[in-house]
Amino acid sequence: MDPADVFKKRNFSKVNFDYEELIGRNLSNSNLKGVDLKNRDIHNADLSGSDLSGSDLSDTILFNVKLRGADLRNVNLSGVNLRHTNFDGATFTSIDFTNANYDSNTLDTISKDIKLILKLQGNLW
Image (cartoon, rainbow, N blue to C red; front, side, top):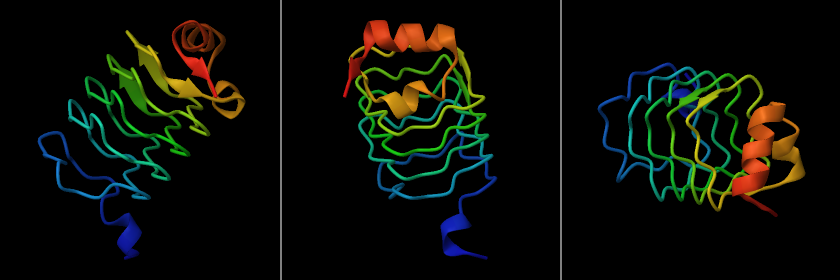
């Protein structure tokens, strides 16, 4: 097993990530429902297909993170760095992009209605 894949397809819904290094981790297809990742640096990680519903990702660095097909229902994304983040196929409801930084690459991966919310609430980098 590749050490980078040690977190892949796991249930982390009750895990405290306060002391865990998440930069570059493969957390794809994992259960991260309701976890607190506030103020964390998760850049270059793969969260594709993961359930992040109800999680707190506010003020998190999501630079170059793959969130393709992720469940982002009721997630707080205020103050996050979303440059080069890939949201292809992600599910959104009750999303808060207040003061989120994003770029055109990120905009290219989200639907028209979510794109409008991001543009209204966030800041183009």
